Image (tube, rainbow over all chains, first blue to last red; front, side):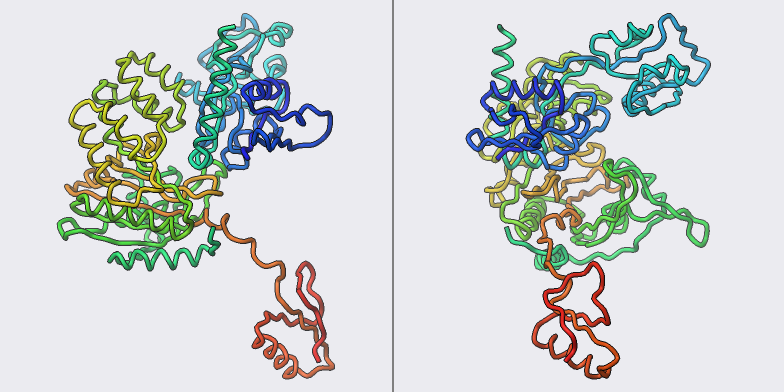
Amino acid sequence: MMNIALPKGRLGEKVYQILEEAGYACPSIREENRKLVFENPETGVRYFWVKPSDVAIYVERAAADIGIAGRDILLEYQPEVYELADLGVGKCRMCVAGKKGARESRNQTLRVATKFPKIAKSYYSALSRDIDIIKLHGSIELAPLLGLSDVIVDIVETGKTLLENDLEVKETIVPISARLIANKVSYKFNHEEITRLCRRVDGYLNKEAVR
Amino acid sequence: MRQMKSDQVVRQLRELYRRYGYNQYRMSKFEPYDLYVRNKSFLVSEDILTFTDADGRLMALKPDVTLSIVKNVREGDGLQKVYYSENVYRTSPMTRGFREIMQTGLECVGEIDLVAMGEVLLLAARSLETISGDYLLDVSHLGFVAGLLDSAEVPRDCRGALLKRMGEKNVAALGQLCRELGLDPEASQDLCRMTELYGPPQELLPELEEMIRGERMAGALAELRDVCALVPDGNLRLDFSVVNNMEYYNGFIFRGYLPGLPSGVLSGGRYDNLLHQMGRGDGAIGFAVYMNLLERLEDPGEDFDADLLLLYDDSTPAPAVIQEAERCRQAGQSVRVERAVPEGLSFQTVRKVG
């Protein structure tokens, strides 16, 4: 039985659909209930929903053999896992954003509000820029509006929230999408099953791309 | 799987190493901080727990055993074969904060030849076998990877990024980075293929033969083949995504895995470069087993804190209480004596004295 950690939410549902099409269906997952774990002995999979930022932890500690995590999470937490495929869904980008038209002054320590302190730190340290990181857990866009920070480092999908709040993207740090990750030890002991799954997912994605 | 307590495993490993003629090496819990600063990149984690000694010298609780051993082994005395079982103090990225980690392992220092390498790999396999018959032992050769990077003329400062992606088996990102660096397409393709490969050496060796470019790769692959031929190969796997720090490790490397554990339990390889950096001309090979991971394999233990709880009060004289408890213990039971039932503990039977 292969344990698969899915990120709760829209992305997870999209990802499940890919896995279903690739031959790893588990009909009970679509039932409306409060169950956390879904099994299908026929296809040999057990799915469970976890908070997106926790997927990497489940996989790193082998509670899940494989999982689907956004690249943002992988960059932020640097888990010891294999990154086997780019699923091409959940596409967005990690950006620096700030008030529209605001001039960035280099003679002050830049205050950066973010959910991703590691990504922000490594981005600015590559630019040799001294920054003050303000770690927030949500509503990051509020920070520059209230003067809590000069800029934010956050995920931008459509840019609509930014636009409506008079903010703009200043810089794109890195493109993000959902990745298929595997626990390193599970990969070794279940090499055949996991590579088969990767091949099938790859096959399905290529077919979709052609269409 | 055989269930064994980790202290039993340590005893068995010591016995195993002793039978191969290795001597136990005991060391102090701390060393001057200098040693680790000079060799910082050899360490798994850079954080070091320090304190000031009585004479004002800065000392460190050992984050690593190998450095202490290599420093103290003299050159030119033939092979030095030692084993150890020591605690080291490290942080892990997951927990931050320091942890005490029990390591058992061995080092072979001197002129390393095929026999010495084969013996160390065999001991690694036997060590894993002691714990579980279902182990996997991954082998790799950094000379083969480095040879490919040399032949493709990859600049030194880009190698870290390539190796990181190899370590993640992230073939898509690896291919993309190769293109960005403008590497020879054929070399890039081989690098990606090498990262993906996983399987028994005898199955993969033919494919690897075809990737050989130049002497370094040929030498590395020949060495890999010869060493692997010296150990039973049912549990061996080739995996070039096992990439250690190339500054210190230079050749043959290996990692051991057990089912049911989230990460590798054994790690080792050739580290001649460390000796070169210490100004020596010879080589070394060794490995460590991370004992702290093994407690995950243990049985959770008995359901009771003791078989019998014996209650007494002032009406029974002390000698009678002691004697009755002793009698029950001689009959094979574990017995706890108390005036009242202790909170939070459980016993199979609870009764009064007499």
